[in-house]
Length: 99
Picture (cartoon, rainbow, N blue to C red):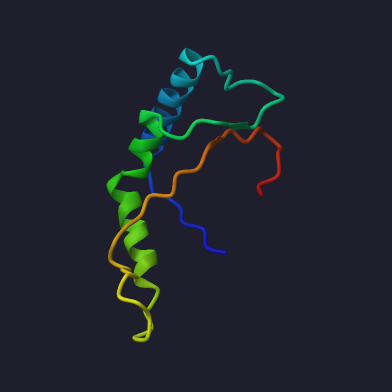
């Protein structure tokens, strides 16, 4: 397991989270709901902003640099090309275990 910390400044995290909560409320979701943890939100501006943040891209580049491509592999494998993994939003509630 690898944990990367301090990718965003605390004020950026607060700003992105606030923007995401506002988006959810405008679109009929309750981010404060006690029953729900996962939300089918993938492409909000806040999520895109976080995924494309310069620090996030730097982390992705560093992770790709950890790998080496076998010379026998197809040239279609390009470890220099960043990819964006788009996952749904999860709001972990206080006391809830991380999985």
